[in-house]
Image 1: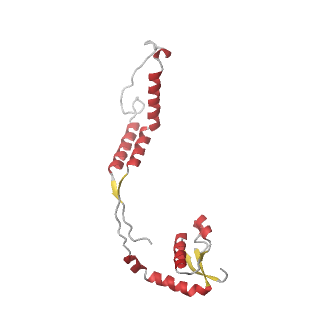
Image 2: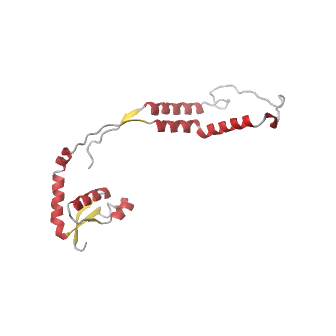
Length: 183
């Protein structure tokens, strides 16, 4: 655009795109300055003064009147729209299943199954026999004190994972409606 003027400085790229499309549907030749800059480096948009919308000087008054008219009648336009919201009830079975797979160790389960299958396939004669004199096994006393053979930390962790799993399986939440409709 040769002779153009900035009609609006928007805080975000989304706002600029909406305003630009509104002006273009009304027949005004508008464009967005620094659109790509705002899309890539959106953190510097406030430093460069926002995202600018340009219109030709010849259509400036018409564009300004359209924007002011749309802003003044925005509430009536929103009231005319049917913006009912139906909350969605959802359960999180996938999230709960993934938590169960991670906590129980899905890959450990697969490896255990593979070892079991291999143990069934390979003949027992291929493995050396263990003599009873070579094997010494003395079980440690079961206690919850550290260093005495039984550690309860793992069981506490599994208990907490089980509580989260139960909570995820049985919780259904309605999606909260937005306080103000977004246009």
